[in-house]
Every structure is written in C-alpha cells, then in structure tokens.
Amino acid sequence: MPPVLFWNNPMLAQQLVNGLLLGATYALFALGFTLMFGVLRVINLVYGFYFSAGAFLALGLTHLGFGIWSALPVAAIGAGALAIVLDWLLLARLRRRQAPELASLMVTLGGVLALYAGATAILSPDIRRLPAELIASSAYVVGGVRITASQILILLATGVLVTALVGLMRATRLGLAIRAMAEKPDAAGLMGIDTARLAALVSFLSGALAGAGGVLIGLNFNAIQPYMGEEMMLRGFVVIIVGGLGNIEGAPVAGLLLGFIEVLTAGYVSSGLKDAVGFAILVLVLWTRPQGLFGRATAERA
Image (cartoon, rainbow, N blue to C red; front, side, top):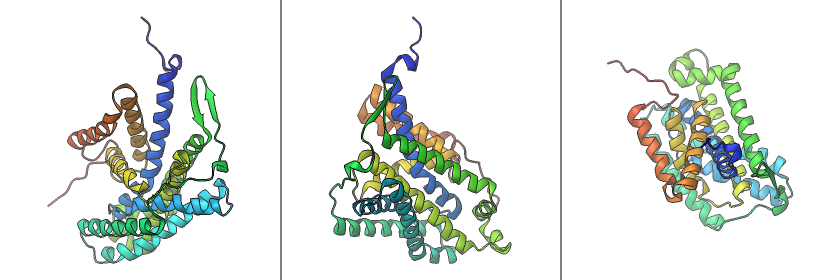
C-alpha cells in the first residue's frame, strides 16, 4: 500500500497548517522573552503582562477608529514603552547592585501579580472582542486547507519580526553592542558601551515584540482579557529552554516544533494530552541537552 502523502490527505494538511500557525504564535511570543533573558540575564515574569497590554492598547485604539495596520505598531510601541518603565522601576536598581538572579525573579513575580490584579480591577476579567470589521473574516481554501486573513497576518508578521530581529543582532553595530553586553556586561561597559541605555532598549524591543504578539493572537482568537499572557508564559518557558536559553534563532524553531507537536497530538491522540506532551519534551531536552537544542554549553572554572 503506497504511503499517504500530506497533499493527498486534507485532514493531515490542515493539521500541519494549524501547527504552523500555532507554532508561529509561540515563536512570536518567545522571541522577546528570549532576547530579554539572553541580554539581561533575568527571567522577567512581567513579560506576559506586556502581551496583555499590547492587546488592550490595540482594543482601545480600534474603538477610537484605528485600523489594524495602524493599531498594531502603535500598540507594540506602547507595550515597549511600558516595558522600559517597569524595567526601570523593578530591575534597574538590582542590576546596578549586581543582585543574584533569584532576587530579580522574585521582584518580577511580585510585580506581575500586582499588575494583573490592578488590570483585573480596572478592566474586569471579562473577555473583550475586537470590532468584527477590523479584518476580513472570510477564509481562503487551497487544496482543502482553510486559512483566515488573521492567520496569514500572524505568519507574515512573525516572519518579518524574526528576520528584522536577527538582522539587527547579526548585521548592525547596535546588534554587536547588544551581543557584547550579553556576553560580558562589565567588559562592554569598559569599552564605552552605555549598558544602562542598552538595557532600556532591549526592554523596549522585548516589550514591543510581546505587545505585537498580544495584538495578533487577540485578533486571531478574538478574545482579549487581562490574564491572556499568563498561559502564554508557560509556552514561552518551554520554547526558550528547548530552543536554547538566549538563542534568537532557536526560539522560532522551537516554537514551530512545539506547535506541530501539540496540534498533531490533539488531532491524532487526545486533546487532553497536548500540554503533557509539550512539557514532556521540555523534560527530555533538559535531561539530554540542558543548554537546549541550539544553545552552547558553558564551562565554569574554579
């Protein structure tokens, strides 16, 4: 019996497209998370709040008459500005005092709990919807595979943002300075790099990426609420660890891998197992390759 190719199997083809779309959302979310950890060396738990903030900023802008193409960049910039402010309030003093990583983790944990509580009190936990006319609701069907305009927008935006960030990091003097700060922050400061300003820039870029992800995912699922970034944080941890801590190129690959695995597990095994499979992969990677699939092992000397 000849093998069934995916283009002759519309159900499998649709599942693969769904996995690509889900993986792209994970990759987009984890991109800024990876950048923040790779450069600032802190697991900033407030990052999920930037995701929610971007979605709510876009929601407010669309009710003021903005279209999605104008609301998306403005909301991303707003989330980036918020990230600068919160980084200055919560983490800047700890960096100056060279506090241990656990201190930063606990400070951001307290900060995100306060922020979510405040946002819920002000905005209520109810799900909000973007205007129905914001983007075409019709779906395109090609070869039995269905894809909507919002899903195409997610794929395009993810591709553009990943390419732009990799290009910034690998082909510009600013990217060179960021990489130098990530490797040796003290040495970078001695070479004349303004590490405090660069940390603010990294916070802005990370917050803007999270905000853009919140807008796009809110648009795709048409469901916006204050805690929408909390669940994505769990996926973000899986992606940055599997892809390699701080590895910009590894995050999109790991995000796509997780998306494919979750969708295929839900479609062909059990929807209740998709979360378990994702975290099982995390445990296996930590057991066999603790630095992640694309990370580099580091040697410590006494």
